[in-house]
Figure 1 (cartoon, rainbow, N blue to C red):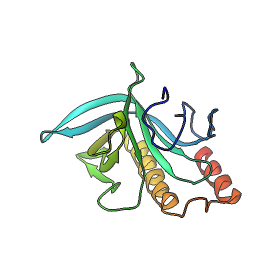
Figure 2 (cartoon, rainbow, N blue to C red):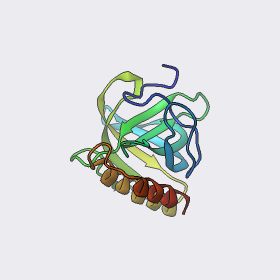
Figure 3 (cartoon, one colour):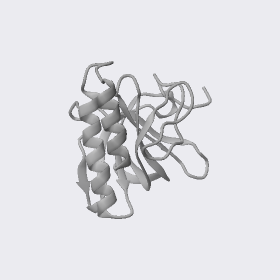
Figure 4 (cartoon, helix red, strand yellow):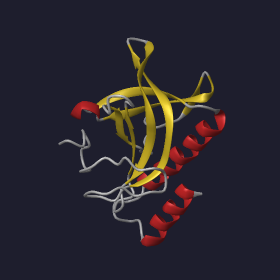
Length: 162
């Protein structure tokens, strides 16, 4: 569809942190910061895009996705579930305290493939906040579907706006 290659979600959100987007699902944006994404190709890190790295939470299942669009073209450059399953989504510092790297099962272009990513942020505090939210998202995503109650969603919304 027009929204992109999201396997189980009908619409990608353009929202800011703490906001819900309109559409089939009122997804909660729990993180949104401008950054630069790299991926590993033939043993070299190459730039994949500049734009807003977002962590989006599904309102019913609690599942969180990492989604990033290229700023100028709006093309999706990364789209994957944030999961608690090694070796995927295991954040590690990459080079300095403004970059984080991980491997994920990415769904960009409707093609499931293992991708290694590095995300560069404007500063160490932003990278630290991303790591904190990403790791919290893994915990939320490891719960059984439909196990999030209203209190959990309210807590997630409050954390996103804090």
